Length: 273
Image 1 (tube, rainbow, N blue to C red):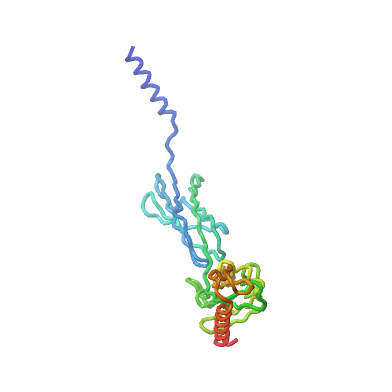
Image 2 (cartoon, one colour; image 1 turned 45 degrees about the vertical axis):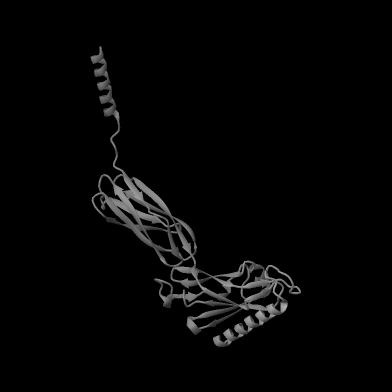
């Protein structure tokens, strides 16, 4: 009786094995870790590909969806079962992009994908604000010096093919410059004059953030810079305020403002404006 039961179990296991589908060869893609790059500079994706049935370069094709455009990718065999998928792209505009790597077996039509994120940070410009002391209700103009020498020929870009977009697009919040000059001294400096009334509400944290762009063969490259500025409230100068937390007397603050304005005039004279 026990022998018959054992025989029945063995026959059942054989039947199950015959009915079970054959294990398919697995094509696996690993896009790799998230990446970070500056606007306009190249970002290279190196994805790993594994096929348990063996890497057949004649029957495999790959492409990468960069989030803005889809391009073919190169497949380089590492050994019989592993390969590297690689391609390079440039993002002129700052942001976070989802990049999808896809590998297709042309013989079976099977497509395998994996994704990663690319964070594109703006190029950094050196920014100087004069005068550095700003009254919330002051009138007239504040001058912002934007040095372009550091990013006009940023890495991998041909400086001869990089030009400056309309300087009026260099904004501080919603404020645009009322006047624009350009000085070639020290590699190039934009001299942008903003109405104080427009930028004063934006200086509460002690900085003015300037956004702009440069024109390259890959498009308008995002540029950002921050300049320090002190904000004071109008009043009699007694007691602390958001722009005067130590409560310095008005005379001291006027003296500091005069010092800043003298430095500003010296800077403009040296720039030839």
